[in-house]
Length: 234
Image 1 (cartoon, rainbow, N blue to C red):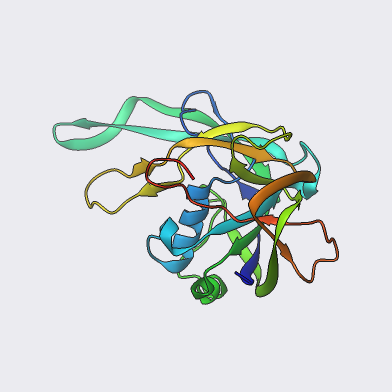
Image 2 (image 1 turned 180 degrees about the vertical axis):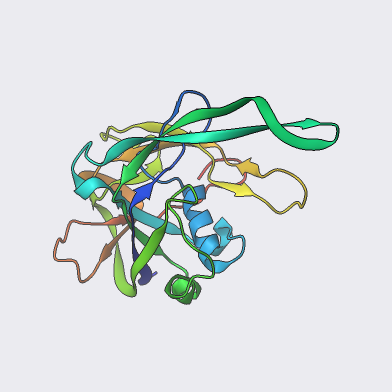
């Protein structure tokens, strides 16, 4: 592999929900998950996109890149309904409130190994978002970059399989993707495993690291995610 697609994507807000947290304040994950990124690409393509089509690398920051800056809580009104006499009616208890943690001014540097997605990102079929439908995003730039494989280097904030030796970071149990091939059934989470949020500036050793040849920082590398097998092992 000697080339990657590089897209810079920005937004005003981002809401990356953490699975299984369904009560109280809905927490926002520090970075987008790989299913979220596949969904983002699928939105741009106008169809389902699966791991066998593309490998993904990314770096993410928000709030100007300052730790803790740009994190807020949104309050939403939820409207409840009930089925009565075969008709959907407003629930007698009225509306309710939900709280959502969100990121402000998110920036996603997205890297893809499949050149077929270049035009997909240049002219998206759908309206890309960073989570909820109101978290609108825009693709600022799309280009092809020359890369070379490196055994180690420093990364931007990203998501990698746990554990990463000598590197600390928040752990998240996440699926790698959702299978949505069966019509009429709910999506099926596939390859649920532990991931680790790796902070910017961390030094990593991994066989899936790539350096952009034009990058003046010779130690800066991109982690390109290697999808797990059916058994959940890489």
